Length: 194
Image (cartoon, rainbow, N blue to C red; front, side):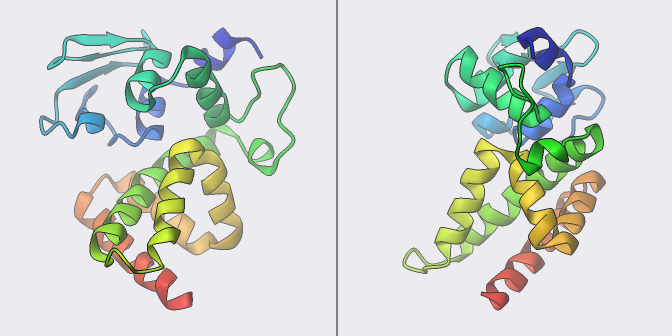
């Protein structure tokens, strides 16, 4: 698949949420990568496919946003975006389960899932003692969400479908208290099952 097709297949808002940002309100959101506290600091324009950070006076297109949040090269950003879209950059379809299930609906659900799963992982790491062996579970979860939210969501759908669906629903609600409460509940259930 051509890079222009990969970039054009997803909105900048979907990329922003897939990277871990909150769902923008009226095209504005918080610069989550720098722990920005102004909920209007970043402007997102889906029709033009661009973003702008008003505090740092920087912006650009989809790949620029990915590089701003994740670092790396444009090629790295394109690979991450291709994974989010469930395609390969070398024109061959991916053969794993994530690519089979990578419909538009599934991609959107994975972004909602990832936003709340990050809250869950971060909250668990904050509450656990540094020597607690279960910290490894949440460290792995956060790493997987960072590298491939679509694949992690697909895996949860297979292993824990009810929890995955609950995280997606909480992500859609955009209610931070509900997301934190659900994340705390699921953390306790996962630890109880281990």
